[in-house]
Image (cartoon, rainbow, N blue to C red; front, top):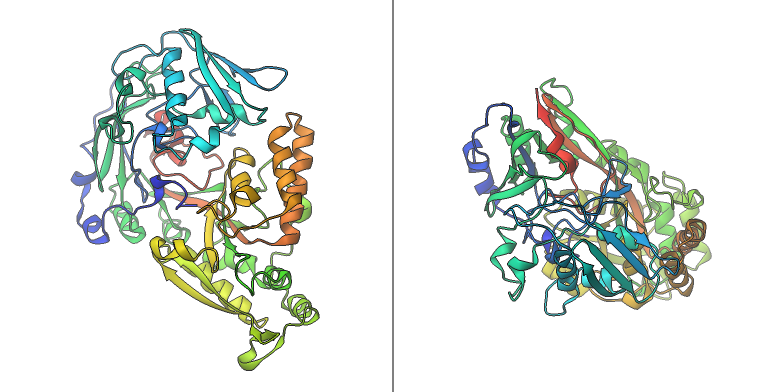
Amino acid sequence: MTRMRPTFRRLVASTAAAGMLVLAGCSAPAIPDGSSGGATLVVATSDEPDALNPVLNYGVDGASLIFDGLVSRDADNRLVAGLATALPELSPDGRTVTAKLRDGVQFHDGSALTAQDVVFTYQAVLDPTVDSTLRSDLDMVESVTAPDAATVVFRLRYPYAPILQRLTLGIVPAKLLSGQDINTAGFNRKPIGTGPYRVDSWTPGDRLVLTANERYFGGRPKNNRVVVAFVADDNVRAQRMRAGEFDAAELPPKLASGFDTDATYRVQRVPTADYRGVMLPTGNPVLADLAIRRALNLAVDRAAMVTGLLGGAGEPAFGPIPPTSEFADPSVIGKPTADPAAAGALLDAAGWTPGPGGVRVKDGRPARFTLMYPASDTLRKDLALAVTADAKKVGIAVTPAGLTWDAIDPRMKSDALLMGYGTPYDPDFVSYKLFGSTFAGQGYFNPGSYRSEVTDRALQEGRDQIDPALRTAAYAQFQKQLAADVPWLFLTYLRHTYVLKSSVQGVTPRVEAHEHGVANSLWWNIDTWTRS
């Protein structure tokens, strides 16, 4: 969810300011090709991070361009060795993880990476005085120690199946942050990492300039410089792409489709685990009725949303685990088109009878609720309006409300909300907090206060069991229970759409998460990109 982590909470430059920027304002002049590498590449995104520090949530799932974790992910999102010489070893009891560091890795300032830097990074996340939302993600970590300069040992409070997936966290240099207030450190804006690029400059609301790391242990990038332009407005970003300012830009599906017929560009539609859905709070007296929730699930036309609103750049969604996941259960996939007859029959049987204006009524209460969405998000607005129209056909009145996040926050326990989440990495990462009873009503963790003993047990088994078969069974049960309870109205999985200049080579799409921007976007491997 864009509100879950501070990194994605704010919009950057205003539309007017963004429209006034020209190429000189978002990138340095191209550096001619030569033996040391290629020219500058300029990419554009809407979301600007608040800090460039992994401890404060930047690029925590890897591909940050500036930092490396103990492990990384390849083009298929499989774990591979990063700063570790090989994938860390997990003890038979599942409670000890041991990692051996590569020899000779240096930070951007030339200092050597040691195990103490890894220890410091994870201890900083676990420090309650540091404003890191990652702390709850690592609550299984009891201790992190360095027996020697090249070895790191994690001791866990309890076995946690996807622990290796958590080791993509970028490592920071202990000597630059020890004794400082990490929340306000200058490092957050001018960081030092081990990644393929070092930070040259960051102009808030405008651009982040990255320069190739000549000493990168994975090999020097094939280009000299990367500029990430921050352009909040979709239309302005499309105009500037058309003007030739960017080598690549993420755009909404409808705007991206306008480049399909121009041979100067190519459009990349990338599969994702990024879903959109309606959170249905149990605190709302209408939505607390299971018949209403199930009827809505039958009434929405997901296929029409994909075709009409996404321009085909997506798939119908029926749960929080994407079809690309090994844990996806095909039995929960429903009918992508609407079935208003079945929805109406279900409501009739539950005592919701037609009332004034075609709105159904039960015990004097009309089938009516408010559906909130962030006013600045045009896609969520379109989806909210589509849900409103589909619900009306079966006698349920929905009032769409475009609001600021500050206005949305206090109303989530009683009003529905068009939300977005999703990860391709492990089902535990998002779903444990989003649907677990322990987190009910804790902000954007389970905001609708959904509670189910079956769901809780399945989610717990999914993280406890090391055996892949047992994990698969647990997550199958989880998906089936969600399909029965309908705490969310899952609508669509998106395809993130990017427009690139045809001259750009080396692009390797991979399944993307909901949260992306500078990190984990199409340019996750931009160090291998060239321009012909």
